[in-house]
Image (tube, rainbow, N blue to C red; front, side, top):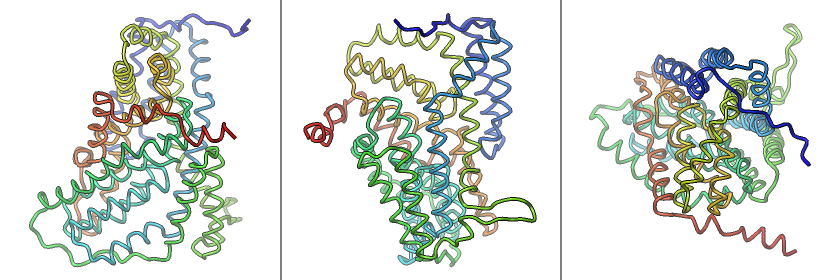
Length: 473
């Protein structure tokens, strides 16, 4: 007999509306701050704390509310995601220090590209960087200050150029094995990470092909007939050996290695490779500032970059836990279960709830974790495989955050476009950055084809051949 204590639903003044009001305050505040120019997720902290305070005031049992909040923050999968963010962020800093982006830029410079050609090259570079770092944030922060001014000086259409940067970031967020979206969607549905990554190729490759046509066409038709500054970027090929780092990490994950194994293994390999090639100065690994009693390291810098999003996620997961404890999610599961008669119904409900969650929380990973049990319960009823459920979740949360102007990736893209000011290149606004993200638009169309047209359903349902061989042995 189970000894687990079963608690009644967490009660709020105002019942269901009382449980939802903190989220409505949060979303309203985030939209207002985002449209006013919040630089990053730290600008949302005060609104999030205010929403938590409102939830405390509206809860009837404030001790229980506090307990549920802490339990939601301390879920194991939250700690897994924070660990992944920190290690992936450190890898991103390592790739920046060792000249990886400059090496890719050098390749583009060797081709003597025009504005239209440079837009396409920018998209390819950002796809490689996002696949290498697994972070859309890191891709935008690394690539935009280098590629946006250069493309502007070559006469590129600026919204299309910004769309190419954030589009490349979207590609990696959906595809990379070290992406937080890939990890959260797979682990939350108990899908094997390597198989989940392989299964996404059939979804992303058609989108990638269309995007590689759409970006040059958009630049050609919208580009103003003005003279481009005859100066681009030369880059530096020295960092090309670092391309082995993402290849090694991808190899580990496709071999079925644990998340921590793959990330830490890739970091160790990249650090050693950087030191052996001279691309990583030893003092960047660790140096002591005795006068100020501080230590300096690229590892410290990487972890510091992940602190903002980590703290934001911890607090938001606590608030999500209070909503779940109110019983609203269980009622939604029951409502959907009674109306789910076919796989199409189950997939539609999973996509709809994930879309609502990401719009409500403004955070793709929190949205996935918020609907984890719902997606599992609804999908299992109709026999949807863990991989199928994970792929649908990932597609949903890789659309809205990269299109709408109050999500962090779009805000980051608009803010980093100000790097062109010193070169006479005008910035773009959040609406322009999202509007020209053809990868996100392509994923939205692919999501509709996946659900309505059952695209990829049989392939996702089939067992992994490598697993069958392993079990046979």
